[in-house]
View 1: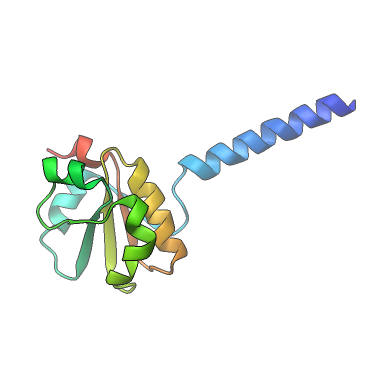
View 2: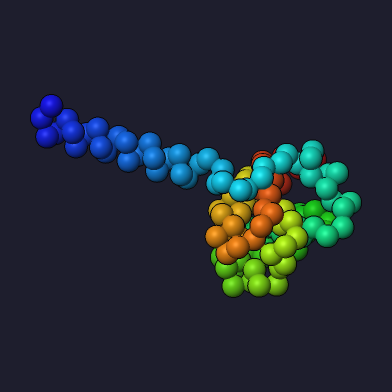
Length: 122
């Protein structure tokens, strides 16, 4: 193998690794559907966080969710209990997955991302 082939293989491997890290759920983060969420909304001792912007939240949100925009989450997460489950939603599920990873890195034990976000909520 010549050096350009090795470089191309390494580049492809890096891209694959990056995509896997970016789009697969992180270890220790649960994923549920909005249908599963409906049964969890009635339970006590759960923390429901909506990481969309205040404008998005004001337009439409689920009762019981607290607005904590993704950009403010690293600083506002001290308001949450690390021992209680945190359920995170956004518009599509992408920002909430980022938020879930942030919370997990900050030491939250039970973090759940809501797949499909508000787009899937009926």
